[in-house]
Length: 345
Image (cartoon, rainbow, N blue to C red):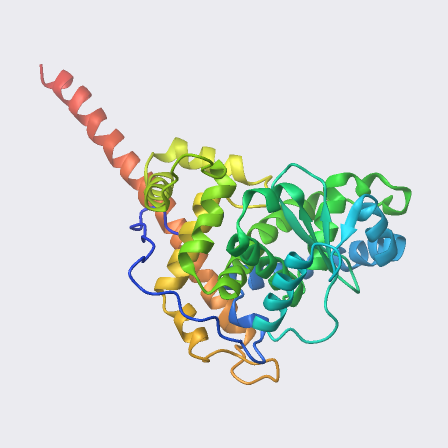
């Protein structure tokens, strides 16, 4: 599947033994600290597609920020000290954790039962939370989602996320898009969109600074809250391992086909990918203050992103090749056993 790492790798499990530290303010942190290399490489590849800049320019020129707000927020409520003050205070804590520079993005809640949230807009992006998301998650889960969406904005994702949403909503059929074929962009954009979710998931964890609470968000988004029953994160991570490692070539192809038109990776995949980032040591290094700053200190060259992304995709390809090789070997052995024995009679 295109959004997972090596499907043959052993699935890491969440570590429940360490106490949750007091949240640390990430002073001057650059978004590159949490950006997944495949996200950054895929976005730069998308930007390099011939005609992509023209598509962005036409859509932005036609709608603008006011148009986007009208399109998305005709029936939503802007959050503030008098409107959902607890959510507003929680959002302020997330802004403070990230030492977010500049004007605070607006936050809206819309009455929608589907569990989702988005960071949208062009020049002044804003965050929209569906009421279904608030109903599903507790305070720390909401903190994770707010950090996730703020991470999208800090990474400059909102412009491209908005464009992807508008294309899916049918903006490609408007007269001002006449003569522009969006087919070359759509799958490339969705591939980036899924990788951007990996980056924002890391930002969500940096907002909570609680791996277990963040992982529980994936569990709840996949299967709902427990209600009067018990839900178990460890069992869910075992399930994630089964999804990534079990099955043969046919199952692997089905995973790819089931994902390629999605904006988000499967929740099991997201949980596993985030756990691998934790176990890589990068998360702990950020909490120790070892991260790139917005002033340029510690920034990574783009070439390193492409190298890391190549390694990430290479792992996936090697997993497919290994599986195909194994299938071919088994078929060859079966063929020789069957027809070899027949020819010797």
